[in-house]
Length: 66
Image (cartoon, one colour):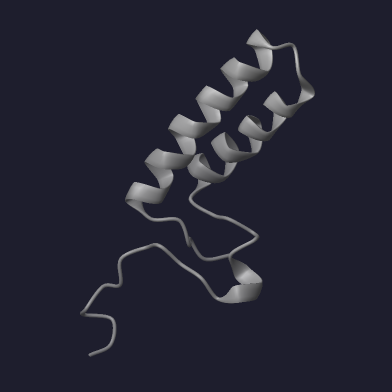
């Protein structure tokens, strides 16, 4: 599977993942587990939900098309 999570998207996922986990712990809610998914997809640079829509936030290398 190709990488489809770019730099800004990765940082956003990692930060939001940590915040959601912390809030889940603070409020003793199972919703904090969603943060684990964000951390996982951000750390491996792949999001399975992007695949059906053909989305990618990775920068395109201009030399690839030549």
